[in-house]
Length: 127
Image (cartoon, rainbow, N blue to C red; front, side):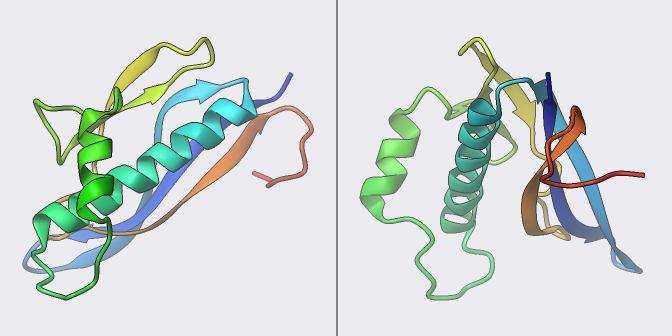
């Protein structure tokens, strides 16, 4: 049986330096469809963050007002920590709170990827 994890790629830093980095987000999935569902939730959450934050002062529309309200009404929305927390489904359908390390003043998210960490799927390789 294969196992999957989601990797977030982003840059971070402080006033004196920046660096590209990546982090593995919990949990680990055995069900690829649940991992893909979590990936879609993470994408929506990030677009929600960009829309709500607007620190970039651009005119890009990341989510429509209807999509924002839909996300806020979803079980994945973390009302206590909306910018830095989100809930993702586990293999059994229960939800897990996770902390988002790529939202902050110096952080910029490049993207996500699902990696196979155990099994013989051909989606990626690690050495």
